[in-house]
Length: 139
View 1 (cartoon, rainbow, N blue to C red):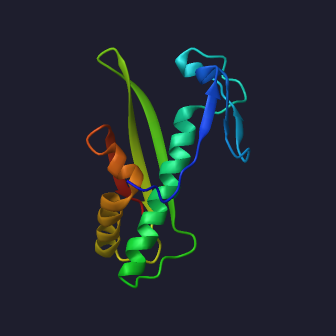
View 2 (view 1 turned 90 degrees about the vertical axis):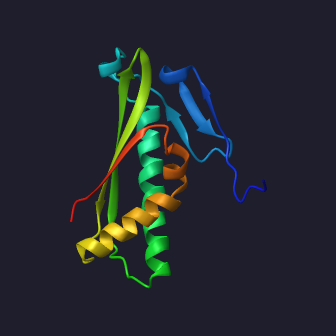
């Protein structure tokens, strides 16, 4: 399989360390949240980074399927991804809630766009069957 795009990041110290992309554009201190027994420092955590990526990817998928249908998407359209970490049978598991705000789009049309975006979004495809993902239209 030929990659259309490839990136690389390295983490040192795990959840309480640091991570950076190979190109140097992103460098993060990582902190374990208090809810997970950490000190809750100023760093980010993997769940936050996953939420950022999923929200951006899903919104791009919505825009792509809308363009195929010649549906104009408002500039303030947004996706909010909530990533939760759960204890499932003694193992950590993720769940995701995607709240989609599609102002100016009729509800049935919006639901159709969201369904198709969920079928094509690389994050949705990668997580399908691996974690619980709830998708909800908020407008």
